[in-house]
Image (cartoon, helix red, strand yellow):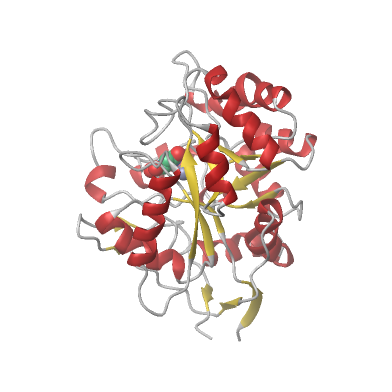
Length: 348
Ligand code: DOR
Ligand code: ZN
């Protein structure tokens, strides 16, 4: 007995592809299932200018294996020196679909991010004028704020003031991890959306810490209490179009994860669609998966829904995913949900 679920080909509205050998190894994992993805600009050095974004886009397309189709949607990394006119030109040419705000020091390669938000006001005002979305890594970096509170404090101290000061600015709160964020999104107008990762629908903070530390479950924002995971599941499966999929699939080699100071990031590109079908079925919401993974994101970004289709097939045998993806820099561990999964992406 099998069960099929066919949805428009999904998109990933928050993805790390990296560069070089890592890019070559991980790109097929996404392009196999996803038609488009918002590409994070936190390379070393970061993708700050439109010229850098164009060159990065070329490298992504050059790394795409023959026969695969995939459209990278490029972003610019916001710094205090970002030129509003360069941003406007990158948007007008169609190259850039969003600008990414990292509070300086918040996460991997965020050192060039923003410390004084007054210094990026002209860019934000230009973005509001032209309708270019701002993607936010929503965590404050103050040392006196507990890491588990950093998202909720960001909403009050940074996000809400920015949005009040910049009417019309379209914002995506990325990889939300708290009920506070889901509630804030619901309380606002359609200029605010939020992405939710696959792993934050599956793990809470106990999964990281109980019974021994699990570096492959460590990411930023870090997973929170169970009540927050349940709030994210409710938001993702609600059918509310302001919530959509952004995997934040973030590959690091095992040697960089399994270290005294391990990198943040869960690599979920390989099995995300199977895991989402599992989660949505558990929530009795398989009919909401197309909205979350394929329709709500394009609606926010004012792009067409894919005309291609993806079929998920449930069978009676558990699906085997590769434990690791080989790269020339060393293996990358694929996110292990810790339970059996029976949904696979069908080949036809
Ligand atoms: O877990 C994360 N990994 N969170 C981020 O914000 C960045 C990402 C990365 O680039 O590895
Ligand atoms: Zn990310």
